[in-house]
Image 1 (cartoon, rainbow, N blue to C red):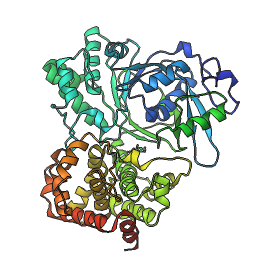
Image 2 (cartoon, rainbow, N blue to C red):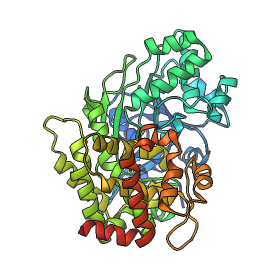
Image 3 (cartoon, rainbow, N blue to C red):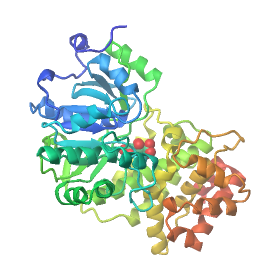
Image 4 (cartoon, rainbow, N blue to C red):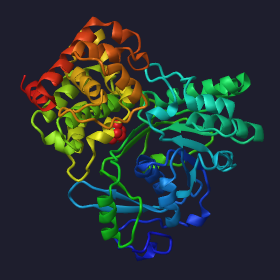
Length: 491
Ligand code: CS2
């Protein structure tokens, strides 16, 4: 089948949106680290609107920090790919043209640094997932013993990690007298701007105290709240897109109609007029982030662990199983909402309702296994912060504890039929080792609480916390996830 390319664009069905600006006139204003499906279905779509509006300074150089797969799929397509928006009522397709070039960092770190040090570049944005920041999730501090950080300190001109690339780029630009880059984190971390700032400053300081001071004084790290559900693309999705477009796209991205981007407005070197294209600029990003991380991602992780253990493949399937929707509703309304900062005029109840409808989206096959990945990097901001607030207020948190217990049972690596689980997590090996001899719920919880980088020092010291989580692990172990969730909803 013919491939999606510049040449075949004109032959697409009329209903498919496509770039109508002069792609050859694009400038490389943005360098994006982490060219995965999420970036391509979220930030790239907002930027595409700015390009369509005529401001061609904001083309994107996309960088994959690990694998060559995205580049290998997109390069023969002249960087073009399709965003398919699906909710079961009819699909909408848009071909995105804003990604100028695709680089693979391990193949050629110098090319990535050259893009970052290009005079036209103004923004380096990141979707490198939680673990890509090389930080300790409990504190947000740089993990100075992280192998990639150790490597980058020894080889600063050929880095591996996202912070390593950012620090070297900031140094190169300073040396060349170029305007500094704004560093824009678009990952699901609490105060993601502050987190990336802390990590980048520390790494810069370890390289050279003067560079650390420069970063602290001159570099902007606006925080963002990013939201769009983007499941991994499957071969069935590729076939569906090919049938609709009449050409083959090796890596389209699947998403939902909903999309939200809330950004702190601090871009001293300039930015696209994103506010004209659906982005909200505010001073209160922190409140939006907390709300989204705790309500959406906290529920998502809870559904993922308990749903997987109960034998469900997708979030929508899990939502339809007995007890899950009421569990998530009670988790949101009774346990999470009372902990949220005030968002004047924002209807939290309606937001929760909308979230549950998004989780039920029948057209998105969002796998519980996918969301279950990297739990050690996710549970601190998705569940533990809320639990801390509930503990401080002397309030119950049984559903949050059940979600957390779901992670503990899941990441120990054995499902309810005794089959091994393919646990993907930077701590997977250490967790398996620590938990393999734990035969009782008490021992399992104790083994997990030894991970200070996840739980900090305070939670392991709390008897209330320990016993609440142990109770839920015991229920999951005795009755299994499906029955535990069904009886939680009833009780
Ligand atoms: C999900 C998120 O995979 C996950 O951990 O919870 O990717 C989620 O779909 C997005 O944050 C939605 O904005």
